[in-house]
Length: 335
Image 1 (cartoon, rainbow, N blue to C red):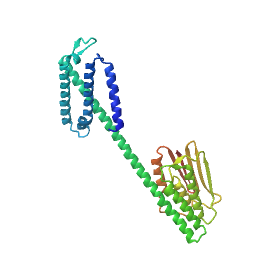
Image 2: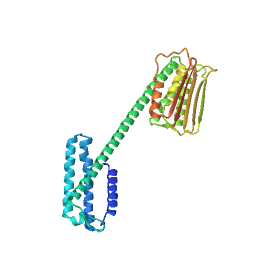
Image 3: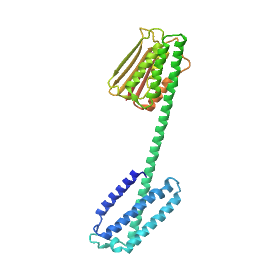
């Protein structure tokens, strides 16, 4: 047992013993109090013998016959010891009633001792059974939590190489074209990677940091496009100190720039971030680029959906509208 559990057990036994003593007959008699204390200690011994030793034959080892034999012998032994003590001190322990005018027979006292012994034995067994069930449930929850954390860590680790792969392709294209935008793109990528590698290691980050990351990503994507990029970014946040799972919307943005048209003035990319009353609403809308048919597929949105299931179970809604010309993805998360 842990130290705190030991203290709780001691306190419970002291309170129980005090209540029983106060309600017993002849409670002011010193000999009576002495023997009552000894018998209370014997009941405590019965409880913990059952809890630590006898119950293990039924719960852990499942040696039922051996356990029953040990329980029978133990019960009989304790009852006989109590009877012997009571007979030896019959004037104190065998008498009862308002004026101690009544006397237990040996059979009555022995039967009573057996019943009390069985009661504390079953109490110890029940407590051990409940304790084991609780520990198993806690172990199951711990294992489940560790598994979920490990899976989240793995999913998050996938984001970095996935993002880096796409960004390096974009920068390679700029460098190949000998674009003046290449140095700035490298600088933006450096800032983004610093956030991804160092600042997003916690389970949750501030919403302000995540939005800064989002804006840096958009700037990086704009640098790789020769023509004018038409993108409307709308941000309405009531509190930038909300905590959020890091790198949550990167998959939306990757999807938008990878498969969308960014140079159509009449149909600009629309990104909306709203946080009101502890609810995040993120929306990305874009016209489809029919000339860019990526056959390799991607892990982005699949990764995102799984992270949402693990990080925000029953606290998120993910909506996708996909038609011939337009693609829209929408996310609601209760923070």
